[in-house]
Structures are given as structure tokens and as C-alpha cells.
Length: 191
Image (cartoon, rainbow, N blue to C red):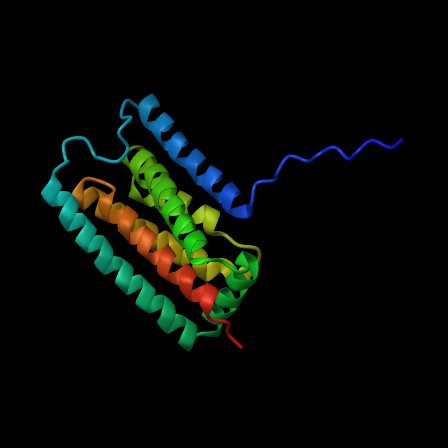
């Protein structure tokens, strides 16, 4: 008499993998900050205030609007941007609104805590931005514009962090950029 098949443990979905990855990045940021003597990676020491946070969020939203506009403009104007759009659409597959929201939230919190909150105060804006651009290297030369853009965005996010003293502006900007761009990629198939 054959035995019934052994049930397999459920596999993490790709969304689950991303949430675990970005959660790990946030934990690494707090660990790095604790090791360096500043476990609060959300604030620069001596710069915390509610008014500065509000201005930082407003500046972050303005920057996000500019980046999203330039992203749409580039897709309509440049072949390299259309190629990136198609590649990301193919790579990501179909995404629901909830999945897009969760990816945007997890990536913005994890990356900003790690690259701006933990690394920037100790490595400086240039090196932390270069390290931020590294995970944005895709397979092949066609992804180089995304990598270069990520470096520039990293510099601006770092400047927001330094100017306003906390990660409110950078996280809101990063979230808004990812949310709107992922939504656009998921909903618009280019010919």
C-alpha cells in the first residue's frame, strides 16, 4: 500500500520574499545604527522636530512628483525608457493594487532606513548613494539608465535627510515614486 505524499511546506510568494528582504534590510539598519551608537536611524542626532518633518514630507512629495513626471516623459520620449518599462513589466508579472502598495512601502522603509538612516551619517552622501545604486543594477546594459538615475535619486534623498533631519521626506518620496511607477508599469503595456 503506497503512502500518501508528504505535504510540502508552503513556499513564500515573491511578495513574501520581498517583504522579508526589506524587513531584513530595516533590521540591518537598526543593527548597524546600534553598533555605531545611534539605534534611532530615523532621525539625525539633534535635528528632530515635527515642523522639520512636515517640511521634509512636503519636499519629498514635490521631489516624487518631479521624478514620476520625468519617468512618464522618458517612457514617451526615449526608447531606453520604453525598454526598461517593458523589462520591468515582464520581470514583475501581474501585480494587484495591494501588492504594489506593499512593495512600495517595504522598499521605501527598508532602503531609506539602511542607505540614508544607517549608512549616510557614517559614509557620507556620495558613498551611501553609490551603494544605493548598486542593487539597482539590472541584467545588461539596458538597465544602466536606471542605475544612474538611482544614484541621482539617492543623492537627493540624502540631501532631504540631511536638510530636514529625519527620514520622513525620503520615505514618502521613495514610497510615492515606487507606488506610482509600479502602478503605471503594471497597468500599461507598451507595444
